[in-house]
Amino acid sequence: MNTDDFGLWAMLAFWGSAIGGIFLAIQWASKKGKKSPAPRDVMIKSLDKRLAEGEITTEEHQRRINEL
Image (tube, rainbow, N blue to C red; front, side):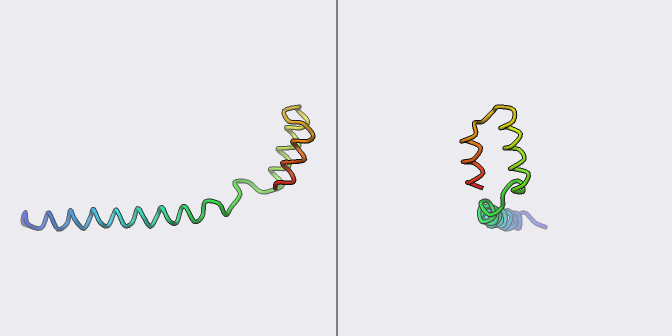
């Protein structure tokens, strides 16, 4: 490999990583709002526990369950 090939490989590596990064960013953004971080029943149990411990009011509990 001579020194003239280095510029070509550096350019290919740069553009490959740039295009790959854009592709991965689009993949991540398209998946971001589709799935809840936890199943609905786990979230309801957590809200029930917070209500029982007095962290949230009954109204707040009901509002958050309705949002699920």
